[in-house]
Length: 372
Image (cartoon, rainbow, N blue to C red; front, side, top):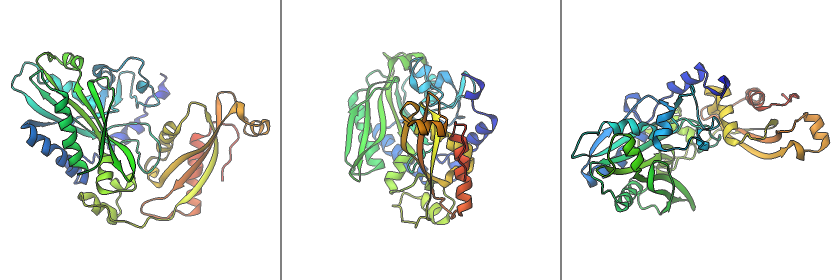
């Protein structure tokens, strides 16, 4: 990787300044109430002790990938998915990165049955729409036992407790899934408004992960579950837009303090801008979304969606279009639709055009500029 592949100091500072909605020390939020509702029944059922883990989101690449069993050439390590700070340090991409260090504390102990609760922000490169952000919240729930007999039945019981806590009586579907740090992995989906949505993934802790933390897998075992908290909270309350979770509008912010069902708030009118940009062929909605969030900074909250309406590779463009756009092999022409809809203000046409131009300059890699 080159220097350009790493976060700049400004990007890192902005990421670290973001409020963690799971942390009571940073203010009250319904996400904390939901997390408590998930942990409490597991504590009652198992009689486990509870240990909360909260650490800096800056982690080693080894903790985020190597110690959890990811292959050296795993696609998730690529810069397009990972926010690297240096060759060996990154912003964690999942809360599981906290668990190898947490597990090391149990070496040499006995009589352990503990639920490790690791909530916090993780950092991704993701699409821009009403259900995704670049810095989502996750929680990892790992039950660690000084006994080697944790079974699939224990995992399935954990799944039932979780679904009932998040979405009581919801129809659920459990399918097999693979994770490098678990065995017998499962994916948990719930049915919401006629659509199956992923809620969480889990499995039994992989013996090699335990061994790498100084725990003999013949004598230690446990369960590992990870869940996205934005989606869980939005499903629980019926929230239609992920940006509402951080909104300052009093009509919205007051609703983010409880698990009560969402009460409709009239949205402001949208402004639509369609743009045609030239990009590298490997660019997709995730990497484009990350570039949009980076260039707009705090103003990214004004964007409701960025959608790819069409993609045409250089080789597939008519000769007249190639000449006009001056595309090159390895590039593609994308038609993007940008929907601007701030939560708490109405944009003027000039403001919408300025944001459109900022996005255009950030994404367009061609020599011919079309600004308004």
